[in-house]
Image 1 (tube, rainbow, N blue to C red):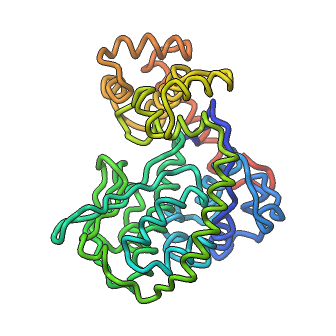
Image 2 (image 1 turned 180 degrees about the horizontal axis):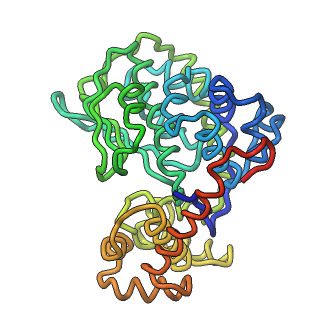
Length: 363
């Protein structure tokens, strides 16, 4: 599959976890610094903390799979992380009084570690029922969706087990893509019942664990760490453009693109205020909706096997012909023609990029 170019998107990504990925690929035989050189990243920026652009982040995912020889490298990296890997967030979660408190802290502050995904939870289950933690994209990730989901899911599952000293029982872990060729890595690292082709990426566990007291609870440490997490979140929100927040909300419920009124409510403002603030940024809700539809359409046609009719339905078109007309207006090509072009382009790229490039040459 050709790497997604994620055209039309421009965002910054914190350098959290890059050193964990780099450590892994070096242990698998890569030369120190080879991953960063291939992705065009200055190692000093990673060590000092900071941000990289989206193109560099997606390059990290591609080159990590190539250099490690393991397409499921994210599953391994996530399972190896310790609370220290997550900074203040790890301390806040680990020192929470109960699993419920820990999950609420995780869902509230996980954006400080990566704004590319959204973590939500359902914690209302009764004894005998399952609670769940769901992972969804905050931007259109294209073919980066699967490796990033693997990394985050493994991180979440590992955190649940660390919290309870391995006592929690995972009922099921679901993924919204078909079983990958490296499914054995899933089985080895996640050690739980797996379901592929599901409606969402989620980890399910019995609700009876929610109010279990945690062995490492420390209210003082938790309070101090949460204060630090809140400062980081406030800083992230200051850095995050309102347009990005709207795009993230549009992607939160796959197959159901909400209207302006619902998005405004979820962003804690009136519809009039949302429209006014977007106008101040020289855009509109309808423009962002159209951009999101186009990016999703290109992703579905390029990176999935969904039929054109199903793609149209997921994007809110009741008539596939209306979707076809809109897509032709966006790209100058019909959906099927676009898919065929991407497949031919991918075949040519595969033939020329299967050889391992020299360090520092990039893509």
